[in-house]
Length: 381
Image 1 (cartoon, one colour):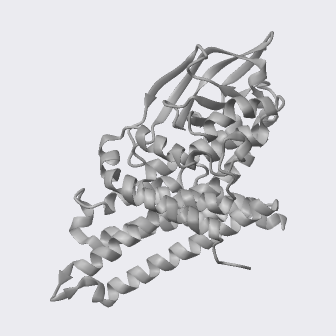
Image 2 (image 1 turned 90 degrees about the vertical axis):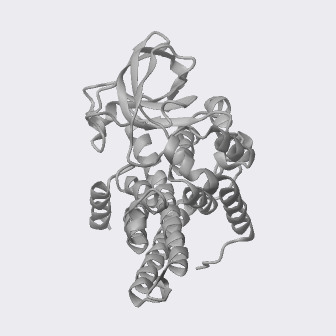
Image 3 (image 1 turned 180 degrees about the vertical axis):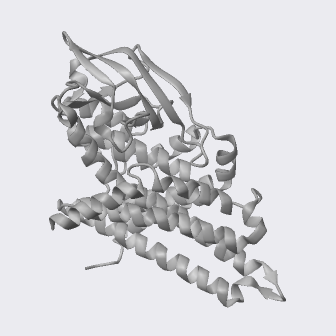
């Protein structure tokens, strides 16, 4: 077992870290305040190859392994939680759906512009009454000649209002339960009937638009079906499983930002004639914060390693996402505590880290659902 990064992985880490420090960190507060999609930063990331990190070069990607992708996303999230979600939803969800389940022509036509960063991707699964309970979805797709007609709506769709390609899940056989769900490629600018109802006002994760979508007699050609009819539920589970590794990376990145900010503040802030970092209570907080971050990183890379090896990583991804999500919130909370009253104001970024961290425990599998997943896997071992 080798814990050292390869030369390529160090190069990726250093390159993304430099980009984040120079381009993202200086505008992170502005992104949080304005809550506008940061197109300029996305364009810069596309130029650096960051919008298609794990995809093969033949499809416009960077051809990086999943460790490198997680490292890159960790650094991006360290700069901005919202930017981290933009990239994770684009790559791990929308892009990965096309890479894993699209045929060759679909990959060439739709995956390549996503991997190159010319297009933005979104993944439309959740509905008002169907979050964790996927089979409860009400969106339908009915075959009509050589087309499918999609009707219904989706909620909580990251990148939903800015996406060029959306992978949409709908019931092609409403009586077949999870075996009646199929997945499709939708192009909002080309397909009449794709409607953005609104975008959510959120606690954190600013800069990444979270949209409510409606499909009103939306017609798409039959060659936009991914895989076969009835494969959609399996597509969703496999995609979310891989995505949990990258949400763990987002959690680690936000936790690192909160920790580093708190550590620097502890070295600068003086009380009773000395930096507050000299007090044992603050040292212990910092020690616990960093220890939890290192443990979360280990779980993240363990899951990534199993994915690379083609082994079953369902439990590992769930554990990585669960632990890193809770650690990010715990570390951000301690960061506020170390800042004292200043941590509760918007004059310091400590409160932003806390707001961004909380989302990790909710999307792509709530902590409660993940504990069920882990428990099921343990009972099957």
